[in-house]
Length: 637
Image (cartoon, rainbow, N blue to C red; front, side, top):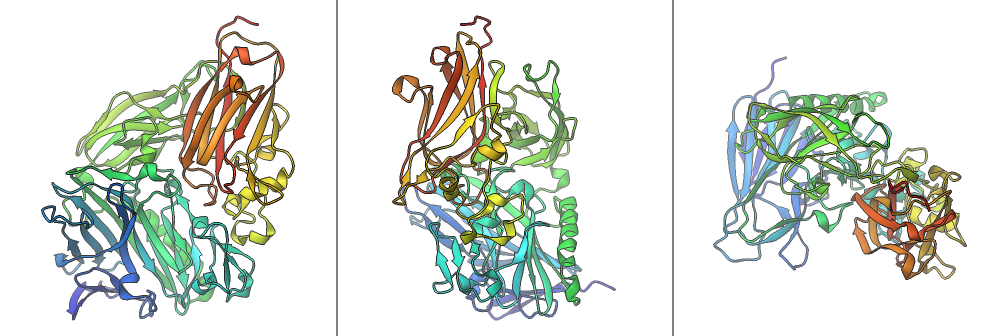
C-alpha cells in the first residue's frame, strides 16, 4: 500500500497535520496539542481538560532568591520549518528580549512539538531552549512534556513487563473517594469507582524509573483498543545521568516525558544560570508511538509491539530528519572507545576487568559531579563482561570521563579531559579505576551498588498496599515503609553483629526515626557489634557509602556515645526525599571517616550510628555500604 502524503491545513486558529494514520490538531501560535485522532478514536486527549492542558510543555523556575514559579510554555510565532510529501515539521517560538526589563522567564523557547512523517504511526516532539546574550540570572528546576489522555478510555498503564495495572480514576483521588496521607501525593482509595482498587494507595512517585532502566511507558485504552506510548530513543538530553529517577505515568490518565527535574536529588541539581550567561540545549526528540488492535484478547500485544518500536527508535538515533541545525546527525558526531579496569590490591593482585560498569561523558569536572550536572548533554554506556566499551553518537566537545563499578565504592574520573570531534573515534585505551582504600577489610556491611537493595525491605502495612508491588522486586515502592521500622523494632533500636547478622534480613533499608507511644518521632541509634582479636596502631578508615539522605542529623560514635568518641557528624544531610517517595536510592555520597586505634579495644567493640533528628517521620538515611579498613602498619597493640 502506498504511503499517503503528509498534509498541513490551517483551520481558523488551529493547525492540522495529517499523514493518513495520525491527525494532530494544534493551537496557533501557542503550540498546544488539542487533538490526536487515531485508530477510530476522534480524540485521544482528555476532552474535559482545557485546550491548553491536553498536550503541553511546562517549566518550573525561579529568579535568584525568588519564589518558585510554574508556567506553561507556549509560542508567540508560528512557522512551518519543513514541508514535503513525506514529512512536516512546525515551530511555535517564543523569543525573550533581554533589553526589556521584566520578571518574565529569561529564556527563548522554540517548541518543535510535532514532526509528522508519512507512513509513521506516531509523531516526534522536541524543543530548543536558548538564552541569548544579556539574559538575567535564573534557576531552572524542571521542564517536561505532558499528555492528558481521555479519562473515559485510558485505564491501563504499562511501564515495564512487571509494572502494569488498571489505574484509579482522577475522581478517586478527591475527598470522599480518597484519603490524603502524610505525603501529599499519596492517597488511600477508600471508595473508588472501581471497587477492586478499594484499600490501595496511589502515588505518582510509585511509578518512577531510573533513566537507565526506562525509555518506554504509556497507556492502553479501550473502545477502540489503542496504545499511547512515549519512547526515549536516547537519554543524552536528560539531566542527572543514568541513575536519575523520573516520573513516567500517573492517575489522570497522564503520560509524561521528563527532560529536566530535581526529583530524588533536590536543589543540588538545579541548573543555575548567571547574569548574562548564554546557553542552548535541544530537548528530544522523543517519539509518541500509537498502535491498535481490534481483538481485545490481544491488547497486551500492544505493549510487545511498543517494545519492538523502542528498539527501532534507538537504532535510528540520531535521527536524520530533524530540521534544526542545533540537533546533530550521526556524521556530525564522534565516539570514544576503551577498556575499563579496577585496581584493588586487597581484592586481587591483578587488574580486574570492570564488567557491566557504567562509563559516561559529561561536562562535570568533579568525581560524581555528573549526578547533579544539568546544563549539558551526557553520554553513557555499560561495559561488557571484559570491561570493553564504545560511547557512540557523542556531540563534539570536551568532556570529563566518568564511571562507576558495581561492587566497588566511589566514582571514577579520568585525569585527562576527552575531546570528541565530528566523524572520528577517540581511542582511550586501558583505563584504571583505583577505589579509595587504605588497608585490608576488617568488616563490611552491604554490597556497593549505590542503592539500599541489599538491605531488609519490610512487607507493606496491609492498610496501605499497592497490589502492583506485592510480589515485585520493587517492594520498596510501597507507601509508609518508613513506619514499619517501629513495627520491627517497637522498643529498642537495630542491633547488628558482624559475622552473625545478615543485612538482607537484619539491616533495615532506611535509618529513620521511631514512632513513640504518643506518635512523636524519636531519634534512633543503630549499633554495630564487631570483634577485634588485636589492634593495629594507627588510623582505621570507615568508608560510608550513602545511597540517599533526607534531612538527617547523622552522628557516628565508637564504643561510647560521648564527644571524645565522636568520629563523624553531619547535620541536615541530604534533601532528596527518597524515603517518602518510595525509592531505594537518591543522591549517592561517599564519606571517608578516620577512626583512631586509640578508640578501639581488643575483643568486642561497638559502633553507633545515630539519627539524632527528631519529629520528622520521613527523614532518613539509606546506607549503600559500610566498610572498616585496618591500617597497613604491622605494629600490633
